[in-house]
Image (cartoon, rainbow, N blue to C red; front, side, top):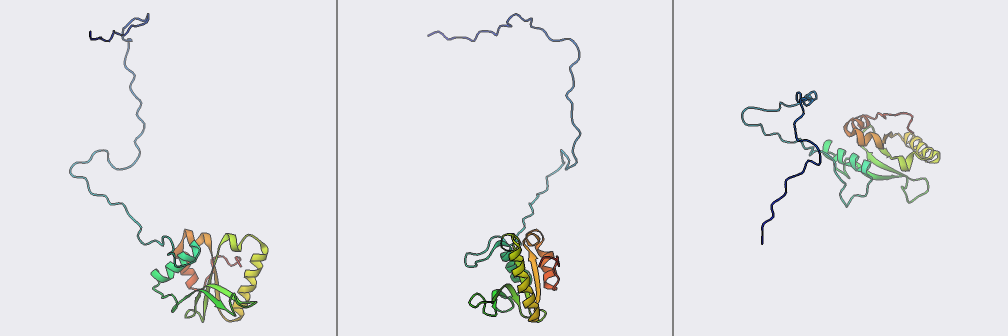
Length: 180
């Protein structure tokens, strides 16, 4: 069987010559600031900074929203408070959910300010309607009448700046006085 050799490419009517004149230099953009392109010697080992001190996801045994879990984690890990001893999660007052007029606090710290109540205000459950805000306001007034310090923490603040929001809450300072 004969071996076929490729045919040379035809110019299709165009002459085969180089264009006269200089070659146009390629435009090079300005170099952005950053590490040098070349380094001499061995390159240093650069380890990516990993944030290991973050809440992550709640354990399956705890039924909580994500902002409530952040507060729970912060109280347990950062302040070294023991759940059930130093603070109560979903604490019932005045009968809780069992009696009419009962209250359920997200977090109750009995050793702070003769009782510190921290409630997490999520947008869906506490901000969508004026009736929900009115219920939260009446609950707040009842807790103040009982002598407790009440702080409402907004969901956005907890997810954005957990440390700053919780440090203010532990001092009994509410970031937005108009919240409830």
